[in-house]
Length: 166
Image 1: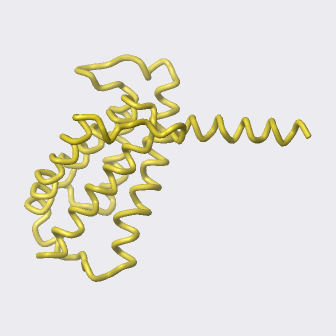
Image 2: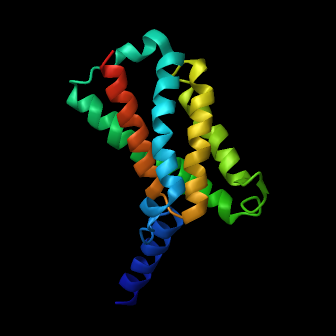
Image 3: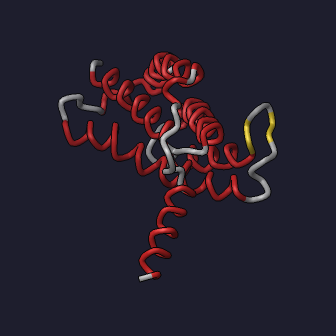
């Protein structure tokens, strides 16, 4: 049954294109540790920039927690860093870098931040842009979406817990 083998190869190739190949040891990277540590500043900035907006989260709401901390980051990273940035990286604009940031990362960041403007205050744009550039840098660095998903979940969890504590 050669069609099964061809289908399996196509599925494997599509998963790799989305950044779901082998899991790189990103957790051992000092930059990854620094990105985690910077989450504290990110949460403080978002809480300050959002004011009363942050009080809308209920830390006791399990469904909101699961959605905000796990499902939304997973889906967003799959769409933005996995698909969009992956496609852009494979095109001719994927290689050029400006201060270490690829054009693919920059374009994905603009689209990512724009998508968040429909549900979040305009004051969040700076934080979302910065975080998106960090996530995109890890996508470029490891050709993987795994570090992006982990960091995005981490950032959302910290913010959710901090906002729920208000």
